Image (cartoon, rainbow, N blue to C red; front, top):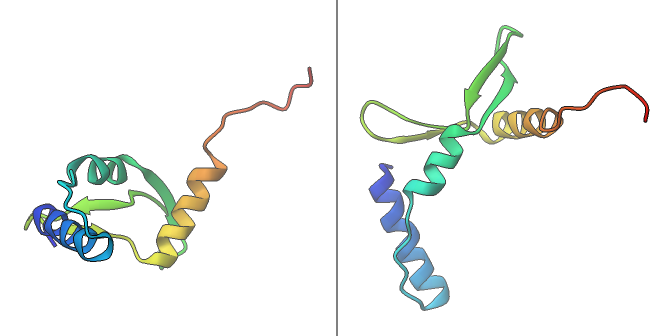
Length: 88
């Protein structure tokens, strides 16, 4: 889907599920996912850093597979905080 198609789909779903009309802003959440980068291991066993979401040249949203996304989110979580081994 394009971002606009996704926005429309979410708005229709919200109306059907909750009986409320909202004006969903898809660009903020999509930007957050595009800026969130994680590491996964590719088919050759090589580590790759990539965003969870990208927009294709045809303006379609592209997300990683669920398994790859889980691997990336695990890597993000494991690397979210910098700390040292020094004792206080």
